[in-house]
Length: 103
Image (cartoon, rainbow, N blue to C red; front, side, top):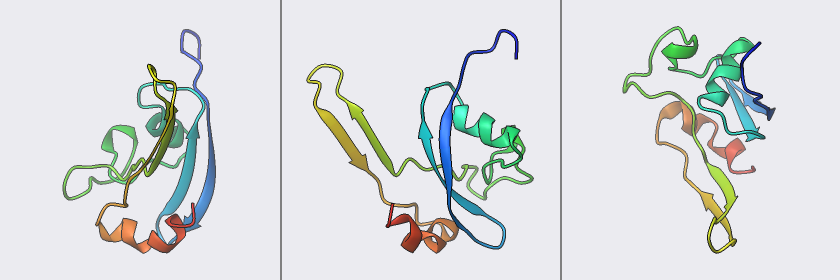
């Protein structure tokens, strides 16, 4: 689009259930709402994300987007920081628990 900034990511399908897909996303750029916007534009809005095309909200108003593994270089010490977070206790996330643990 004219005037828009470049945004790039890689993704892969990790698992699927009857109604949902678990994707692993690697950001190549860091634009605001990038994952939400790019997935919605390809017809795959994030569960609960009304702003970007989900049909209904999650009961708690959240969206089903979770940063379970983030790696970055600390800006001062230049040490690699590696952070992993457990999956939310939500039943949808837990249904993918075995698959996600292999990532």
